[in-house]
Image (cartoon, rainbow, N blue to C red; front, side, top):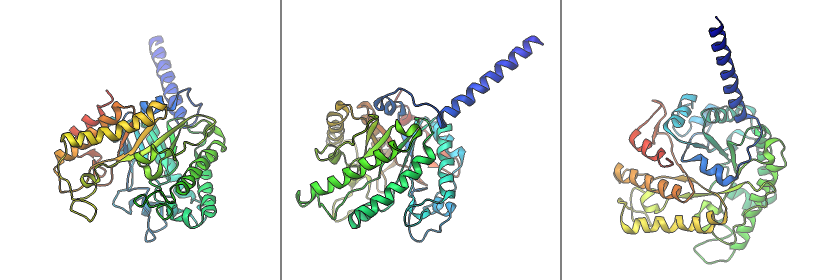
Length: 372
């Protein structure tokens, strides 16, 4: 009997410890860990794309309608666990808030509740979570009415910050997604307007940091992801791109990598390029190394952590083997340089959401094994 009671007490204590560990993910003190170290801990990641980032005037103002508008089934906790069990260390959660908000970006409670539920599932699975504002028409809003757009942007991030302010440091906020101001600066036509465009962009990023830091709770020291101009590696390494002032000193920079775009983004020839169907030549690897070495030299070596928030290779004009090798190479070359790579994945992509399994498990095992 004494042995049974001892075993029972040990079990109870273990369950209490497990619950405490889980609660620390949601609410608790932030660890004394640098952002560089935190990004390294993420390993490699995956996006929950074309889901909560769906946008369009035709979408009904219902949470499920937004979630499923671009072909995704309703997300379940098992889908999230599948990604964690496969070895991914971070899930980026793209969210477009405008459909479920009024014109001032007051977000509906139902939508915010649903986002919080999924964030909780991601964190409970053991993965990091990156929460952003995705397709919310910021380029048009800011160029048409900067002060008005900044007011809406501020209102949105105040709500997000308030809702998640007590979550632990495995939750990261990302300021923007693929934002730039082509109406102000045409990068193909010289430098006219470039400084103005970058000044506007830098102002928004600084506002993001100030909003989050001023919102209380764990947000005073939360690790934050700062978007680069159009999430371009070249623009992230431009002298005009200014890292915001942050009293906590906990910022990373976000870039995307889809190079060469003639391979990764198109299935047939277009006006700006001829569709590429092969990968693996000396020239291919030289280009990949050139861009990632630029990140390493201009950012990582200057103690600025970097996350590739999106990368991938799409289109039915190339073999699965070509796509697999490309995605593996980008991830491994990035990780070797201290950069966290996060695969862009959507319904019908790598994760078969309805079946709750990966379509190509050998590839997933290979890619999630990179950090080890």
